[in-house]
Image (cartoon, rainbow, N blue to C red; front, side, top):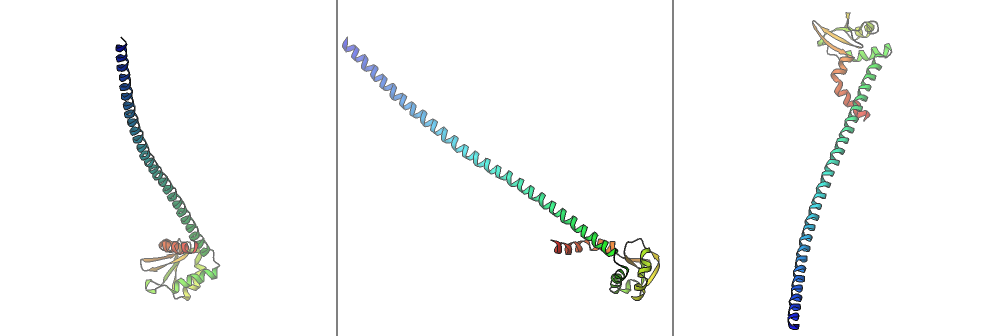
Length: 186
């Protein structure tokens, strides 16, 4: 019986060795599978992180760009407001000139005027007395008719009228005036 027990013990020992070897191989396979899975997870996390960072950078750039555009829009709007104020102030100063200085300005405008447009000059009711002399001096005829303008004059040639009122000049030349003022101011 001893021999039988030795054989059984040997078989059991061999079986245990085989089981340990199988378990070790199994463990190695499990470890390899787990390592591959972890490597795959790490790679996917790296890709995810890079994509997330790229998306965050895009979102950040978009927000910054939007904020910059809003700032530029606000600056442009403020510049336009300043230019409008400057133009309004210039017109106000023209209209508030002393009579002699105002007549000199209008006289200068009349000197540059092409007489083929006409020689009859229409002014506002308040300007009739302060511009009568300069209109005659420059070779034009002051109309008995008055115009509803704040300053400047209108040249009449038959049924055609050419508007040289300050409002009209500013409206027509507004873009150029703004460009000149912008160069000075900004």
